[in-house]
Amino acid sequence: MATVYFYEKPGCINNTRQKKLLAAAGHQVVEMNLLTEPWQTDRLRAFFGELPVRDWFNYSAPALKYGEIDPEHLAEQEALALMLENPLLIRRPLMQVGESVMAGFDQQAVDNWIGLKEIETSQDLESCPRPLAQASCARE
Image (cartoon, rainbow, N blue to C red):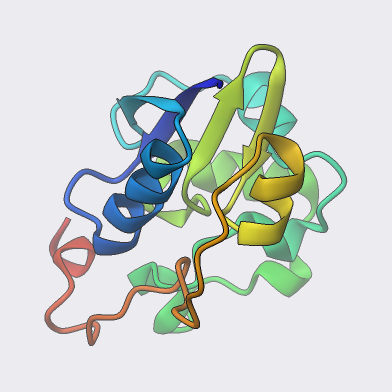
């Protein structure tokens, strides 16, 4: 099984669920704080691979929910600069296994990448289930 460096927002409900799925599949999860990690542009960019810029963002972040930022109209360098300034904008989790990296938690993609146990779930494991007013990220 894999050692997964799991960059999360501590206390995020979905990140907790995602880590449980990884552990249930036998992976060792090393928790990393996405918000305090000293990101560099090139390192952060690597996690997004071939994803379009709009898919780099955490749509539960207050700046996106309130329409302050429109990812559809950002160039790569603009998006990365915003994320370095405000890590809440980064799609979570970021995961690393060896030299291989991934952004977000699409269960099928994670299963194809490192393997997951077959678990039936219809839950959205990426979007914050809390209303914005109650979400702790709205206050950070």
